[in-house]
Length: 242
Image (cartoon, rainbow, N blue to C red):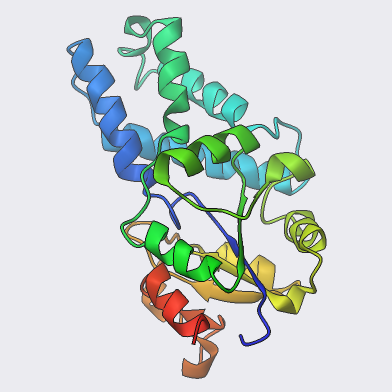
């Protein structure tokens, strides 16, 4: 890891806590209309559909490469479905538009801002997210994320884990793949980055890992497949800034 000059970060789940942020705003809007619903499940279905859609498009499928558009299409689909149709008629167009922007207003994990600020002292730090540019810029301002650069699937007209996303970010940073580390709470993201020669840093976050056995994700030094496993971004800064 000593040759690493730049760090690319997955954002949703890795740097920001999308789950509690989205659930809170859904609950608030529901309460405004006297609606009781399983908001955590609604938020998870919204997120799962997004993950499925970005993966499908990354694999060559047709669809929007702007996540605001994708999120709105998924939201409207959920509200029209039999399970959630009792909510749909009670939310106005303006309310749907505003709740769709909740993804711009996600709170960072407690270690995110201090960790990024420390890492920024000696490394280039940039997002590499499937979120669109405006979403990522708004989120950075809202959550105080001090990026040096913002890379988005929207820029490259694809989504992770398509190789184009990783290699394009590396190209624009003016470095070699082995001089970049991908930081993520999702092993699929790190496997894709590693296959292209990037270093990898795994940071477990609550309820983020789709792998059924996240405890088996280990560093290479401990017989695993990633370069580093850390518990926080501040720990990562302590290691890399030595």
